[in-house]
Amino acid sequence: MTIDTPRVAPTIEEVAAAAGVSRSTVSRVVNGSTAVSPAALEAVRRAIAELNYVPNRAARSLASRATMAIALVVPEDTTRFFGDPFFASVVSGINTRLSRSEYVLNLIIASDDPGDKTSAYVRSGAVDGAIVVSHHTSDTFIDRIANVVPVVYGGRPVRERERDYYVDVDNVAGGREATEYLIGRGFRRIATIAGPVTMPAGVDRLVGFRDALAAARLEPVAEEDGNFTADGGSAAMQRILDAGVEFDALFVASDLMARGALAALGRAGIRVPEDVAIVGFDDSPVARTVNPQLTTMRQPSREQGERMADMLLSILSGGAPDRVTILPTELIVRDSA
Image (cartoon, rainbow, N blue to C red; front, side):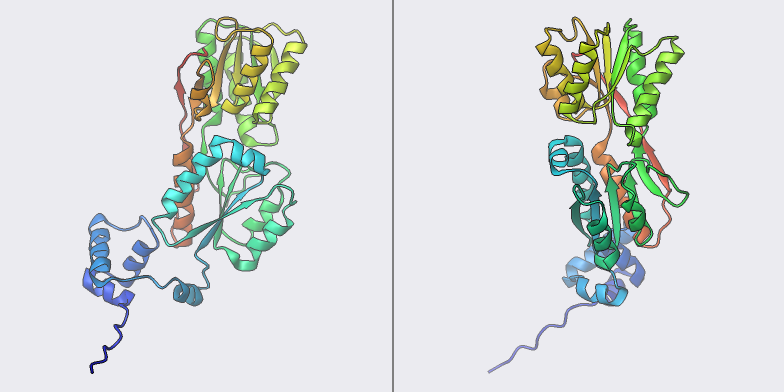
């Protein structure tokens, strides 16, 4: 009778030797770092396949005190998180990038919690880093997290510090271009439904709107906060209508708010674009499912998620990525304006 000797699992050193690279290069490949040449990447992947190498996450975690987990912190309620296509697109981008690494993603929706449970969880050592999306002026607990683990922000931080890392779109330029498009179409009585002033994106898009009007020697006929929600957009639109404001065009700082505004206009018997032209912001699936389809500013939400994850992975692997990445927006013309 023959007893087979258990096969010893290959080590990272054996993979490095087979690939003809250093141990640190293999480690970077396994952890999904982009700081590896294409030739080295291919050699390591080939060696991993030939040796059937499986990274020992538990051993690495014990040795380095790393958890191999990243927290995605969203200071919003569940209705907002699951109802806004922006979040789905961002999370998809983050997950796409992390799927090529050994890190797992922990989702934390910090809605009813003032941040105590969230910050305690992160500060306990449960994760190696955090990505924070959609934060407000009141979300001071984020500072307690950032003092313990590396944090990358989705959007410019409310209180930007020199050490903060973030990925954002050019919201000022997007708001300006949307408004310039309406002005270029001959509209002169332009109102806006803006995002909350507690969020940098809300502030910046409003600044772009005002800048474009000022350059054309025009004044906004109305400015209302729609809180980046469909219900908020509907309520803001109704306030403008109730005030008896005369307007021929509307810049709405998110597609969700634009959907709400369209509903309110429809109830009032106001046609789009025949009576009022509308430009939204995001180019989310909402823009193509409403009637009429929205002219809107496209922001690359999925790419934003990928860039945030890539930035955090670089920091965690000892890299020094650019502290700030600003992505461009793009005007998408459809039927509403």
